[in-house]
Image (cartoon, rainbow, N blue to C red):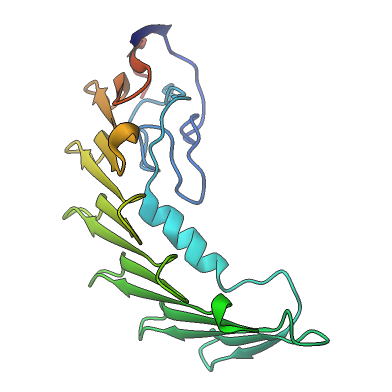
Length: 238
């Protein structure tokens, strides 16, 4: 089944927050990916409530940053450069005790996090590697036993935009490959989402006018309702 939606003249004035779910953390559900939304002062990116588009590298960086923060009080060891290198939580008794160690690259990016708690089952190691330009290239999560191991690989365009995210989980299911393509102005033009099993596969296509305003959004699902939305605008106010 396909639903076709035609939205009328969209000329509302507004800011540049995208208007469709772009967050400071970079998890985006619109066509901009956190990029500038064009030259028109009166353009607001249409909301796409059915879109599942996520820039996974930006989401991962938020998660990595959160690893250095804790909701309980403990003893922190700080390096000469101001980086947290160890956090120890010591509760009365040992059942909830844990120690977390952090190592960093020469440029100050987190390269390893080791978590050790009471009992080996809770031990995890997270390793991070980066491109020559400092972008996240791989996140390897190694848990005690193989069942929860995960590796995420990230590749980028020459302009530094995320072009592929490979999520490799332990076992034959739950793997994901997302591919991202862009216009010459680095606006998202296609996002393909491939999963195992394949009933969750989908593709989102985005088209723009000469002023980089979204004119069409097409969602194709392997299972479920497809959506085809077109958008029309008034004159571009510069």
